[in-house]
Amino acid sequence: MIPNDDTIVARATPNGVAAIGIIRLSGVLSLQYIRSCFTFSKAISPNKVYIGYFNDPETGETIDHVCVTYFQNPKSYTGEDSVEVHCHSSSYVIKAILNSFVFLGARLATSGEFSKRAYINGKLSLTQSESVIDLIHSETKLQHQVSLNRVQGKLYTHIQSIRSQLMSLLEQLEGSIDFPDEVPPINRKDAYHIIHSISNELNHILSLQDLGKSISDGVHCLLIGKPNVGKSSIFNALLGENRSIVTETPGTTRDYITERIDYNNVHFHMYDTAGLRDSDDVIEFLGMQKIQSLIKQATIIVWVCDQSTPLTSDDFIVLDHIKHLPNYAIVFNKSDLSSNHVMTIPNAAPIFQLSCSALDSHSISCLKHLIYEHTVSSFQDHDLEFLCNIRQHACLKTLVCLISSLLDRLNVTYHDDMLAIDLRNCINSCSELTGDTITEEVLDGIFSRFCVGK
Ligand SMILES: Nc1nc2c(ncn2[C@@H]2O[C@H](COP(=O)(O)OP(=O)(O)OP(=O)(O)O)[C@@H](O)[C@H]2O)c(=O)[nH]1
Ligand SMILES: [Mg+2]
Image (cartoon, rainbow, N blue to C red; front, side):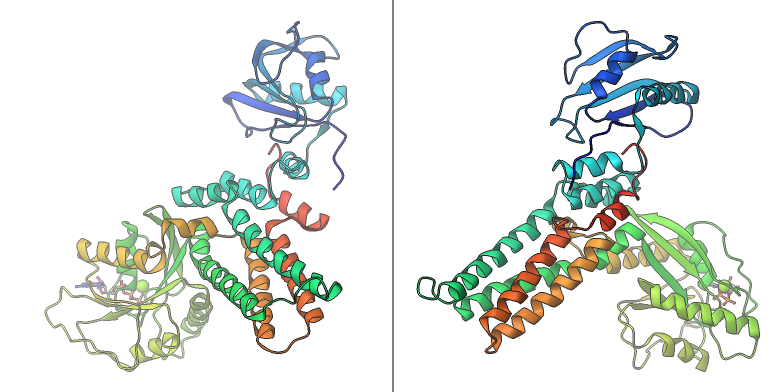
């Protein structure tokens, strides 16, 4: 990739009035540009903070009293000569300083251009660069921990080590093809063991990605059930506010309502839905259609039943929608009412079931904790190191498929030349995941997700 030869500038702090605003310059002329505007007369050494006045290079007028730090290449974020100007964050001052640098010849940076340069100059791997975006956008402690792990390059290091194991196999295989008298053929049994253990590792990493999705997007929890069982009451109790209308008339909720709650550092998107039942009502039919598409996207589905009355055919209509799924739980609501019916549901395999009352805060806390336990908390801290973003997840899936077909082919008398091609594909797929081989187009897509100034 060609290194950049121009000098870019951008504000690194957000718009708006604040005590301090930061402007960043990166490129060969950074030091020259700051010298043309800064009143500090002596030489500017790297990594020190200098205080002085910033003057407009065109008019000589003072713009602000600022602090300036110079980072000499390669010891800077971008790997290029860089300068940071810390000024007062008025929009006038920031604009005037940016204009001064543009007047001298700097170019306004595009989104993510500083990080793209860091990547091109080998300061960050692609996985680390991508994680910087997630780090900036992280809202919860868990999201922060996941992206920090990626910035520290743990996933990268792991995939690199898998890549080098594949590489040594390929070297031996190609050596034995090209120089059969000097290099012995690979031992297929040993190769099988190596690829088998790589396959297990990758499948484990792949199995963790649902957790990654739950941490980055939040857990989507859908409350469903026939009318009047108390879905909206449970929804309100989980939220701790009267968000949904609750009445004793069946069919009160017609459309779905969603709200977010945060529990143990995870976002939970709760969905209250219209009651499912056999009905000719057009509005209810449309409500049911929406529920069907929500069911497909839900992390967990909570089927609410009313234990104060016997189950009816409408309850079984609900069960028909979910019984084939691995991610539904059953809540027997209204446990406070005396006429409790013992609930046993044939052909149901819920991940948990709970007897509860929307009126009792203790049982609502239990429900919240069970939802958390069955979606997030069963994972270990070290699993967080292997969570991918969307691009990496797609690459990981391809890699897992390639490794699995390589494994199948090692079992049969597949020709060495063909094995070498498969191994090479696996190695390329590792490089794509880590970002060591990547097209300019993909790169632009990744860095455009950054903010300007990062
Ligand atoms: N005693 C008791 N009453 C409850 C409980 N949960 C809900 N209710 C009552 O049951 C009725 C229906 O509650 P909703 O929360 O509106 O039920 P829903 O499932 O959302 O009903 P639809 O929106 O019509 O599908 C209301 O009168 C609630 O006060 C509970 O745990 N105990
Ligand atoms: Mg309701």
